[in-house]
Length: 546
Image (tube, rainbow, N blue to C red):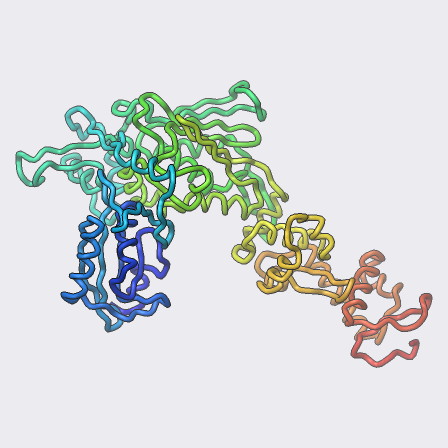
């Protein structure tokens, strides 16, 4: 394949399931067991740290070294070769190891965190091993004869279509569930004596009524006016159950019905913005369904919509070594079959990045981040409807898109948009805990701010690029007025303050402010005494009145 095809197929960013190596080396002793204890993955040999394809042929020496490393970790790997850009590379497929613990040769228990192999420490080791030794309820067989009529064929075929597979009828449902890894054949499926074992994960994902097989496989939703404390009265209730994808749609419709939607005009077109970011709501809901403990018979996922927040409560403690402090960057799936199916059908993206993206999306709208409360029997995720800025400002930030990375950068941009300009001292009052000098340097380096004026009169305003991408309302008007003054000075040679007020349609305050800024910036020169003072362009000759 061509180099471009190679990068399109594998991507250039290392993650939990992908690692590039120049060749087999000692770091294999960490990457192999770390991937085996996460979700498995690929080690691609022949790509250096600069993402240059340098090649690593699958020779006898390469195979011997890789298998020797893998045996030290007690992990069975598979090797194959691929050609890219004229180079042969070796791909090492590392399986996920279940039912036992795979450690590095020196005895460390490792997990993949992003593109790195990190050791577990302290109590996290104990929790991981304990959870790994237990069999998740999703692995339990349904406990009755398999009846295809119990399953929603449309949901199964939708999942198959996302994998590029043809649809099936009821007769082919068993094979379809096996291909989706929520059922297994004991023996060759083409043999008559082969029997099919369908797991409870299949019922959670695809059954018409999963509660028949997994008591509590439903979501209880309630709308409570007010903010609490205490349960308070309920204004609406609903129960959602069925194939998981349809359950998500049912819950999403209830939440949309009972949360606000704002009409905003951040640019030239009117937009509708939901009270909570759509991705954040969906991710909180999917996490509650995908990571809950289905072994807690009768326990349901409970969602409460208050005036100021949404609470998602899912049965079961946090799985494995996950805590509320590390869950943003690490993951551990209690229900691996369900998670793999959700990923394959496109309901979730990459494993482990959901919580991080939830926090990031709330920060991008300058909302309070989600909170997580873990107990011995449940996890509660709360989304807060608390805005640091107006909804109009949030819509404007969304139009701006990439560029500002931190909450402080976004707050500074919003304040500059509101006021037209902002001084360092104003930012210090707005953001008392921020390093203002570093913040301003960053905004200038990213071409988000431009400096106007000098010395004590220095101000900062949105750059032309920001205004072009997202609009600037008052900034654009201020720039037009400033340019009008400059154009009139060029035409007449100079202007008095009274004449400047006339140019700006009688707005004396704006005239004084803009003239002062132009003088402090050095673009305009003041001539004459206070009563007869006139203003000319700095590069223009002195006026006769001067």
